Length: 115
Length: 110
Image (cartoon, rainbow over all chains, first blue to last red; front, top):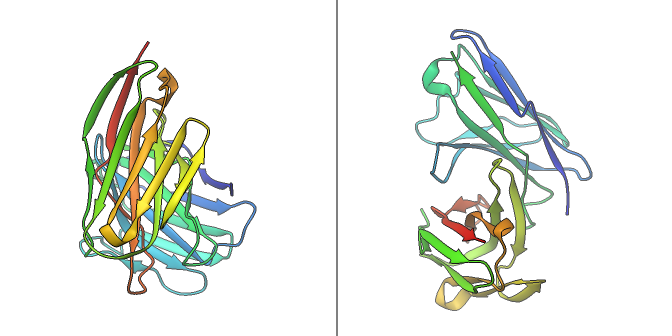
């Protein structure tokens, strides 16, 4: 299957700082990427959908100024958590698909801890 | 939006046992996938199966789109099968956004 690489896998940051998470599709061009958040023992909650070259579409309740998403190329999307607070601590997972009607592949996830 | 329900929520098996996991969805779908989330959080693609039946080793899946459900079969379970199994669907209508069920947590004891 296709490979989606997400970095870093784990990050600890101080409250008030910003953290950038990268999501790369290594062997295919992803027209669409998704960012999810997962709390312990819960399902994946969609945060936003990004299409290459256009602004991300955020789900209701997700602060677009806090969670900045940039889909700069067909192989790279980034999620920046700005002015992080302890309540932003979570597991963040990206996903990419070649075209809308194809299989979605997921990155390894990033465990963010804000202290 | 589309509702995705998975059952059972929890499952405990002895190694070697067989099991069936179910995914019900409330509307017609374009895509359906099954995933296994391992203890490190990685989502492993098991099946891309909007309809029909597929098999891969000890695992197989069947989706009956007209009746809005999918089944994942695990035969001769192994301890490495432990983890959470998720079903994700894209509702018909053009959004093409995967919506996840709550998952089935599987523990396989040796």
